[in-house]
Length: 302
Image (cartoon, rainbow, N blue to C red; front, side, top):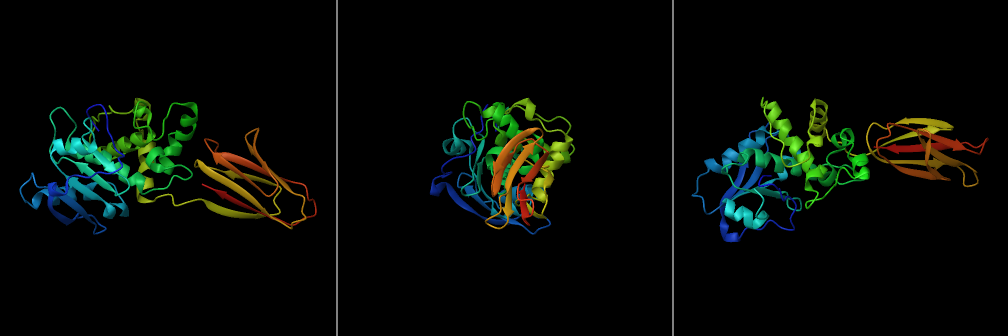
């Protein structure tokens, strides 16, 4: 975040071993009793109040159990730039759940705590599912559905995973920025900057509420229902994601499935149909043929 660009996904976030001279595990003071690993550069004199202050800060952010897997590395900005890239104020490595940042505010840049809050948004997404998509690139399930990330990606107005020329339309970065806004809003802030991603992603109150739900009550996977001998099923699909319907019937049964989104047929099959829900809030499934056959339709939806 800052300097016009934020590089967040790197193959490795490796500061020289000698640079990380001290640190340990520090309690965050949250209601879960969470502690996190903090490593501090030898450029800073040993002073346990520095990492403890940062641990306590993380405890104040909206979070879940994913906080316990975080590692924070504190280093001077020159070291951060060498690790994260010359244009970055901080970065996050999803492979090791590590944030690298400077503990100090930089002149004419957002406060260090806001920079780190954005990066922690990536940490949350890294520990959530938005199957069949990757939450780190698309955002979390409820937020991404509400923000129409799937349909925007199809239309070319969102670029999931783009850390280069189309960075401003990257919904993974928009999610991390929305997470920053959520925390600032809960602190009572009324003037909140929004500079690094497109303004069309700026979250309204509903988006922030759904984002918070994705943190404290994460979507964990599809739900499955069973409908015996149903000829027409109207299925509410409040979330975008993978829809599947399967027939359980005798092998000799001449049955077929037809799936509609509105007036459009979006999938056909003899034993199963699959469809990625992308904006459709209701689907209609029809079972054709086999007038005297007993069967069950298993429906899996996000």
